[in-house]
Image (tube, rainbow, N blue to C red; front, top):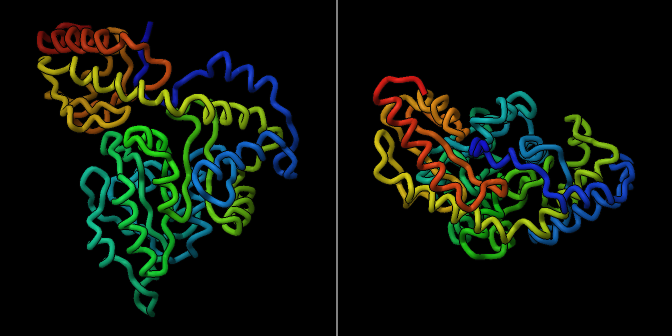
Amino acid sequence: MQIDLRSDTVTQPTPEMWAAIRSADLGDDVLGDDPTVIALEELSAQLTGHEAALFVPSGTMGNQIALGVHCRPGDAAIFESDSHMVWYEGGAPAALSGVMTKTLPGIRGAMDPEAVRAAITKRTYHTPATTLLCLENTHNRSGGAVLDAATMGEFRQIADAAGIPVHLDGARIFNAAVGLGVPVSSLTSQVTTVNFCLSKGLGAPVGSVLCGPAAFIEEARYLRKRFGGGMRQSGMLAAAGIYALNHHVERLADDHLCAQKTGEALQGLPGICVDLDEIVTNFVMVHTDRPATDWIAPLEAEGVRALPFGSHRIRLVFHLDIPADAPGQIAEAFQRAGVGLSSGSPA
């Protein structure tokens, strides 16, 4: 059996989730009458502590709708330099909304608050207005690093003082909440708007939810249509999301534990290094002495699928389809792959 650690997006619906999908009440969401979509949006708003919510096909679309509502063409938004919205959304801020990206370096996804304060500019004949601060929690390129409520609150205070909103790319915000042992609303209430994914650790097949003030969501619904995200009988997808929010949040702790045990099992193996202190949610970042791409085929031959995440780094992402006994199997695969690479023999 292959252990697929490429992402937590590869999960398959559980039998119970399939049953929820099959029994979903359907309407036409573009016409506003799909009852299951409405129920998902109401539940999402309630959980995150916001007034309203909008079901969208993907996290990228949710983030970019938020950017398009918050900003005008020519405005600037502040991002951490390794953020998903900068690296992995196809240049959408510029292409879709004409927004200038101001990037600031961070430590484990957290920018220096004083640097953020200094980067906020007023509109003049020479400078764009900074109209949005964007955060990411958990932080993908930092290996699932978490921003706690105090840190997020500090950023919100800076934004409030400047009179600008805060958008949270919360693709894995439920992982952050479970990792910190707090309700998700304690994190999401710190921001003006938040987008979270149903199709990552929560295990639904498709979809994200954008949450925020009611007036914002009304404008977001218009942009969703413009961006091609209006779906019809999407209640079958929303039903999976409702099931995930009701049944798959607390179990994220199992993924975090599996990641921690895997990191421990990988300690001391030749050719790789893992920093256990960096494993705080469902990611393990494996640093390699050879190019990361050299490891991928040998690992797959040993039954483990993974992705290179930099020149000498492999990302392992844990999810509900990874069995509890996987850490030992993963360590054995790395050991055999490493021996083959060291000897120069094919895997």
